[in-house]
Length: 267
Length: 218
Image (tube, rainbow over all chains, first blue to last red; front, top):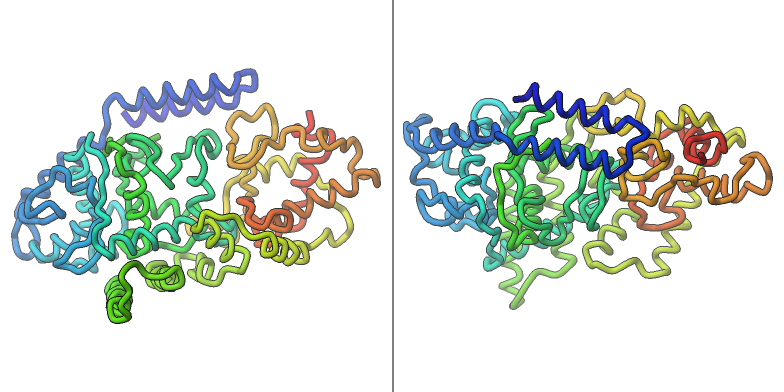
């Protein structure tokens, strides 16, 4: 699978260097490559792992996550993803899917939340958080994003997230809006969704977690934002920090009405 | 860390209730809260320090605030920002504006440098093709900036050393060195001013854009 798709990628790249080919043809090549990718998404393996992890008794307390409240009541998974981030009264915090999962892993299973948050993406319990997030997101596939803006902290985090989205900084003066603030733009040949409003079904916020073919990794929203900030030449955003949760709140509220396709597959 | 900023948030909310505020926090309060959240959320990684976003200049501050408000800068502020950036331009130390377009092309193609996964001592690229069309043979270009194909030709530069070309040559150097000198809130990085490219690299990019032999002008 990986081999086949990287061969396809190589073919597409080869096309891209042929001067005689018109712009449209190269784009079509990329579209065909993307269509081919849809044929079997390795994210399904992470979904299956996530479902197992949810049901399995684990951790110091030897308990499952089946009583975890993701915002729709204990144990309710369907529809939870498209309503996050939201304010949780028990933790008195704004939480996204990943930070909420870590809370449940601490309170129900006895894991140390701070330790998990410090773990690198793809390693140890962090890899389990990503698998759990993949399965939980998949349970809301096709549902439309509809984040709450009822609580004062939900409104405040939206406003802070908006400020983060437009924050110019680093040696390149980039903000999130430098790439995602105008319709119909692209970097190199990569189309960029506009994120100041609903960019459409399965685009932007409604497309993560996603499996990245180019590096063979499952990417959660926290990792997606982390890599955006890296490419912006910004410093390192803490996992599930208030900044990433506020930014997610801004993107999630803007995506209202967009249907989720998570887990998606990306180049 | 999270606890701290959320406590700030809670006390902010409490203060608002105490003050009898019926609704949302003010713009100033939200800006202050955002600064606190930024300080608590980001950390140094490799050679990339948090100061990159906590110690930004007035240009970035006023442009970010204008973006949040959805309003362009007022004319007076825009002019002040442009003048300050214009003053900060370093002109070529030896008076030579035009470098080697071939080296310029390689710099324009490279998107490397200054992320926390890049080496601190590596050579930075210009990222030009990420946003601009420059050479009609290159299909993989971005569209965030305008097309620069035939940049010199369109501007009538047939000999960059001719005194008649002086204004365009200087503008091109200035724009690459510090784009905000000509458009206060331009999306374009200030390649020389912020140390992305050195003087020699900027000279090669100017060559790429203005040399009649460069693929940009074919």
